[in-house]
Image 1 (cartoon, rainbow, N blue to C red):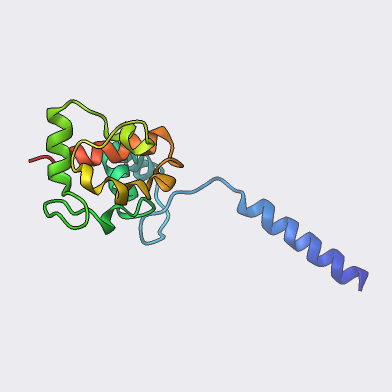
Image 2 (image 1 turned 180 degrees about the vertical axis):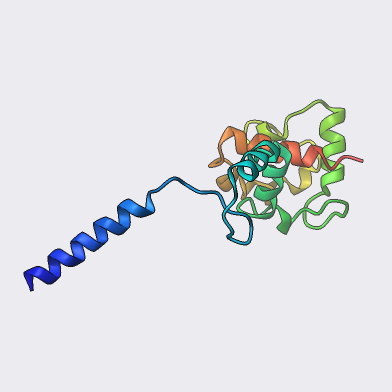
Length: 142
């Protein structure tokens, strides 16, 4: 029994050590790349930079649940993103500050009570997340 346990431990250690080899690059089909192909792939690789507006769209459609009441060009429960963007740009106001709960509504004050319920959620967002939402909404301006 001891021999079996020792053998399993030795095999596990051997597999671990050999799997930590030299990080060979593969193409999208799992074939190993030559050194030249790896160099070319590294030179042409683009950084995974996501713009703030793209992050804002993800929040808008996802955890922000904003898409439930707002559409890009149609008033549903809340005003359209195009209307919001237009008014905030004209008044040089901050959507992020509004979402933090530090600004009065300027687009449709009659709907403020409905929106106020969402402040429990938007107040938990980081400043960057609220700014991302703002960038996304403003990017929808006509």
